[in-house]
Amino acid sequence: MSRTSEPQRRTRLPRDERITRILSVTRELLDEKGYDRLLTTEIAERCGLSEAAIYKYFESKRDLLIQVAEKWFEEMLAEDHRSFEGMSAFEALRHVIWRHLAIVKRHRELTRFVLLDLRPDPAYRAMPLYALNRQLLSQVPELLRTYIASGDLRGDIPLAVIRDLIFGAIEHQTWAYLRNEGDFTIEASTNAIAQVLFEGLRTSRAQVPAAPLEAAIGRLERLADRLEQGAGAAKAPRASKAASSPAAKKAPRRRA
Image (cartoon, rainbow, N blue to C red; front, top):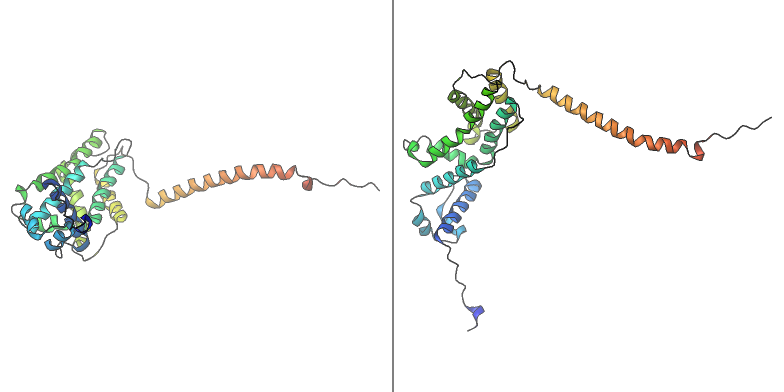
């Protein structure tokens, strides 16, 4: 019998690689189908494993999803965050709000699982995910301290209160979206939350952001100036060339 007619054996991945593959596929299917419609049989099929093999590494579907969520939080903590150097207090505050709203928009099912399923669990505070979440949220008070020290933000409000105001507003803006009852716009929600919070936190020396309409008009005026300058520079050579052309010269008058 030739080698080509022999059945090919499936390559057996090392244990860690197999777990990584299961976590990755689970996350893909979670985004595609949602938590309620996610089946371990489909996860196993896409991984090329038996369903029994899934339960060899994870106690239940919920345990599997908890580990997917933990890996997600670890990825967010490992991200190369944008430098706030040179940014005003408002710009930095706005970026933090925008980033977390964008995370919810991109990862609805994972966010929904954490907020609606895990957080109400009495055992949540004992989970590794709780510690990861606290670590992620601690980045906000660290940022606020920088602008309090520079005198741009008030220092008389507890940082924990400001943090809760930020994330409480984000949660309420996204609640209907997470429950499949509505939607939200990242830019509009970001601007509204940032404006309200900044007005309550800023000091008299803080740089006040321009109103959206004024900022847009300013950008259009600067763009128009650049276009006019470019058009003027392009016309100048053509004008001088036209003036020196024979056709442009007047014919000499004939004497009577």
